[in-house]
Length: 276
Figure 1 (tube, rainbow, N blue to C red):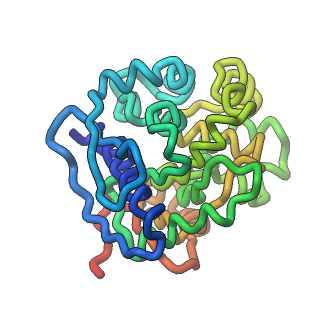
Figure 2: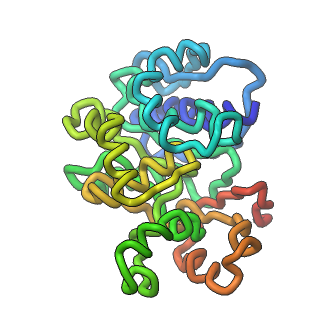
C-alpha cells in the first residue's frame, strides 16, 4: 500500500478543498490514513458542505494519465524496480486529467507528513500566486541536486563549483499546490511535459534523475521559474539526514537550514516526526 499513499492523500484533499470553498474559515484537522484497497478517492461532483468519496480504480487512473507520465518515467527513474519506479511517483503533474473539471485547485501531500498548522492556511497560499504560476513547492533541504549537478557544475567552470546557488538546490514534492484550472488552460504545460522538452533540459544540465515528479518540477523551476511559486520551507520541513551520513557531513546543515515557522513536518527517509 505504501506506493499508493501519495495519490490517495492527494485526492482525499480534493474533498477537503471542496469543503473550504463552502466555508473557507472552517478549521480542518487532518489525520492521515492509508486506505486498505486498490482504489483511490476522488472529489464530489458538486460543491457541498458534506464530503463524498467517489472511487477510481488505480489502473483506470493510469490509463488516463499514462501518455503524460511516460516521459517522466523515462527520464526520472534510476532503474526499473527501484523504489521511485512506481507509477504513483509520477502522477502529480497529471492530476488535472483525473480530477473533476469543477475543481480548480488541489493540495498534494506525502503521507509521511504532519501538519502543525491548519490546512486552511496552506490553501490560502494560492492567493499569493502570480498570474503565471501553476504549481507551488518548497525547496529541497538536502544536497541531492547539488550532487546530481556535479557534471554540469564542472562543465560550467569554477564559479559554479564554489559559489552557492540557492535556486539550483531544487524543489521537494512532498507538498505540492496545483492550480488545476490554469494547468488545464496552459499552453506551456503540454510542451514542458513533452519528451522533447524534457530530453533537451536533461541534456542541458547533464541531469540523471531518480526522484520521479520531483525531478521534473526542479527542472521546470530552473528553466521556467515564473511558473513555480516557492513555498516557505516551513510548509515542507524535511527531516531526512541521509545525505549527512553519505558524503555531505561538513556542508549538510547549510542545505537543510530552515529558519521559517514550521507548519508541516515531512518525515522523509522514515525519519520520526518530533512530538508536539
